Length: 126
Image 1 (cartoon, helix red, strand yellow):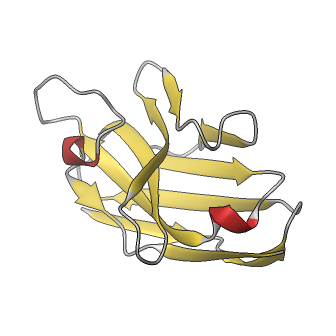
Image 2 (cartoon, rainbow, N blue to C red; image 1 turned 45 degrees about the horizontal axis):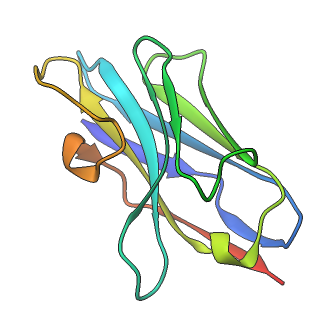
Image 3 (tube, helix red, strand yellow; image 1 turned 180 degrees about the vertical axis):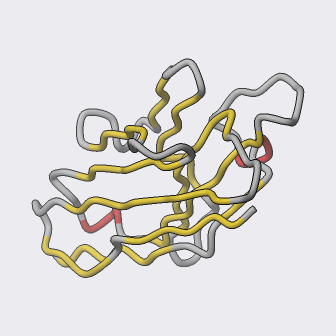
């Protein structure tokens, strides 16, 4: 299974940016997909997740500004980021839980996720 992110870049504070993620594999189905981010010198932070029932979860620091949504193609998600702040600067990682795994998930913990992308850099200048 390969997870690929795109859409990162350099923007100014107050701007918007849209990230895209696709998880691909011959028979892969995602139970949930999520975005995490990691700023220099900080731990990885939960951003947003959406599961197979379309339950959605957001980190406190991005609520009301970021929106996660499934794409029209299976195992794809978007992250719409509005009113960006300098503190949103980080590498953004997409992650997926494979539907073939059984278990109880919080969907907000990085330990729930089996597959990870390489990350895409988002830099917000103030």
